Length: 429
Ligand code: GLC
Image 1: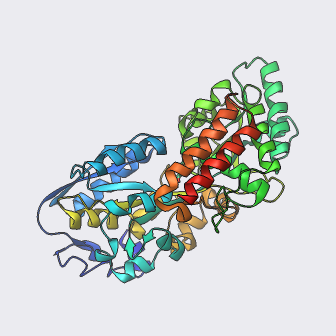
Image 2 (image 1 turned 180 degrees about the horizontal axis):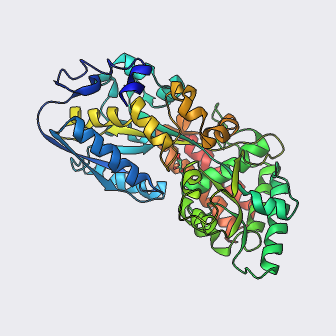
Image 3 (image 1 turned 135 degrees about the horizontal axis):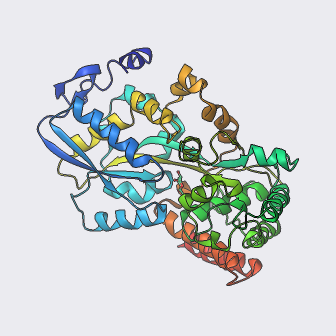
């Protein structure tokens, strides 16, 4: 650990930011005793990794107790929980793990991290990510890890059926059907061609955003505020996805989140899966039926490009905390170079938000990060900057409309016309 801090020239990390008790590695612990509660994710091995990180913080700063508040897996449910704390101006949670798309929503409830972090510390991060978390002059949250989704594919089954890694969504549809037909004919009735996230929540916004960006090159609200959903190629893409339900994908995919897809995949019952990088290390774990049997590639292209949803999570210190300095200190520690390295190399495989980490021997030697290079290049952001505090409403319009088509409630043409009208109203309001 010490070596890494030294290698990055970070021995002076944040000294003076608090003027508190000096501790090892130059990290200055806050003064006084405090109990800090972090609302943390529990997707995959996230919570276990977090608890190890919290233990290291407490070893460094024994005057502070850090505990996790376990939060729901689905991002939309997590936001609903956070909003209850924020509306109540509750001091029960000190640090929130916040989604990359929530900066505008979270801003009124956050302390300004600029007041707690040194310029040197902030300068380590990707400048675009810092800009994305800055609302007005306030640095709402510190980027903790970034996410871009890709296509997991079974190398053994591709070989068995003489199928190439699909590079278009149409190729994926055919390849998944070929493999599913073959495996089902051999007696595995549960086998699925393709698993993904079809539940009505933020995850479906990501999946459908990927189809939209692939076909049109742009998001559902463009950078100049135009609504972009009523498009023939996108309509066809939603219809294609509706056609997956009950053929290459289970009927139940319209209730799936990330973990549901991973469960089917890791039991060996799927040829392809759309998921985030966290599923890579877990898929190679001891309890996985697919360990060593898969690859991870950029998502298929549509008419225009491949467009991985750009995701990721940040750490925000609550302005309702009784100990904002201690809350900010915990966030600072968790997002530090050393801790990002630990998290990147953990089974959870989180992508760092500090560019220098990608140049390290450790990450350069990692098969996950070798696969991530081309995937990250395809990443495309959701329209959270332009919608700001309205993002969740915009996303709900988008995922609800798509979900209605997937579940047969409405047809794709009607759905995009309704979405278009609702999104235009929202943007005009
Ligand atoms: C991942 C992404 C996040 C996204 C969520 C959707 O957690 O990091 O940005 O909103 O998935 O399910």
